[in-house]
Amino acid sequence: MQSLYGAIANYKLYYMEKKSKGLGDTIAKITKTTGIKKVVDTVAKATGKDCGCNKRQDNLNRLFPYNN
Image (tube, rainbow, N blue to C red; front, side, top):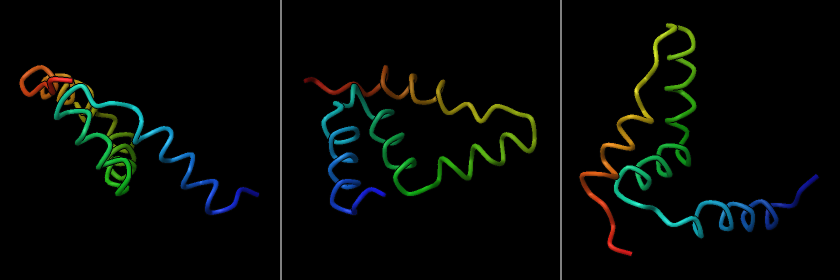
């Protein structure tokens, strides 16, 4: 079983070091971390409709890019 310290370290490696290209990536990280994404995916699966998250994320990245 993984320790809490190890879980936090893995989280930082995956989410914090992965640079956001724009606003869409930042919002995606926040919704995944808070659990909103899991709820949306569950509802989308139950209704059989796509939530449109990926398309929205791409559009927000294109409209509001970060200048890295």
